[in-house]
Image 1 (cartoon, rainbow over the protein chains, first blue to last red):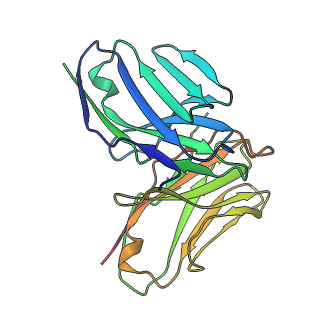
Image 2 (cartoon, each protein chain N blue to C red):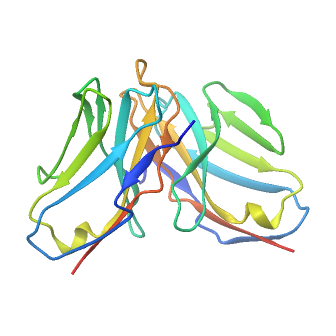
Length: 110
Length: 114
């Protein structure tokens, strides 16, 4: 079993929809949680960084962490075609290494 | 502020050769981490350097090595290249004193082994 599980998709939604992306993890020692967006032929771009359970909002993005369920989510409101990319969750363990999910491909249809 | 810069962007090598990849972190960042990204295995951690010292290491063979210079720039070397080393190699930098700070990535070096 992988330490971090993420549905690879693809997830196809119409423009303006609310998108929900999720990861589950098995190691309760993970302390820091990140979401990255990666466009084709580019490196991952940091979207959200959080270390506590609860919600964190930044513009159209909301990151949610539930440590008791070992479940993290990223919500995208009013999705745009430019949001079409691969979204990666990344968790930091006690040695400060980043462990990545496999990524979810998102397609926002105009 | 300039982002993380990786050179070269593309490389083609043959089996048995060695290769050196370069990474310039964001100005002021002292930690540099390296990752390998492949379609099958995703993003996997190689190693992390802080103040010219390897602070952390992933589960890769000794053919993969790195170093960091006093200006925080880093290089990664792969010796005796194998077909399976074909991948996108990504460098990430963070402010670094505390290892829990967010990492910012460059656009990577795409290495192809023939």
